[in-house]
Image (tube, rainbow, N blue to C red; front, side, top):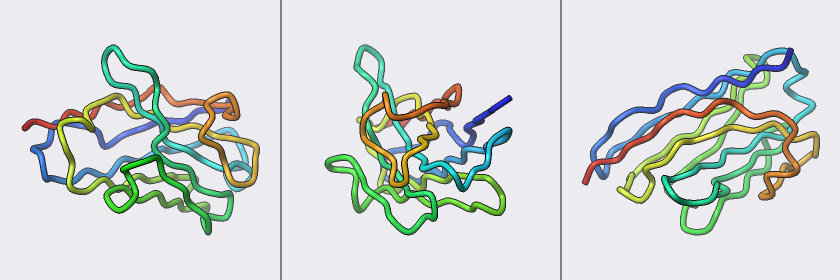
Length: 124
């Protein structure tokens, strides 16, 4: 059974940082590109970033590059999202997804497995 479990969310002040983790089990982690998406109340799920199977290639959503950084540890089956200079508009539930493609995708339909999400709240 495949499981993706996000953690690390919480309440942080604007300008602060958080590091999210996504622990994967039940799959060969290095066979999947990984991605982060987020969904704010009343809005559609939004692409945050993606990372290739080997971790060498990353791509970010508009306006996020420079503040957010994806990384992964294939030996530990874990994906990370480092978020710096957080803004109130970053408040959302953050989801990780696993895609069988090599580089991942900004399209949710390219992801086969999803975690349950972790809440990030940024206070202004």
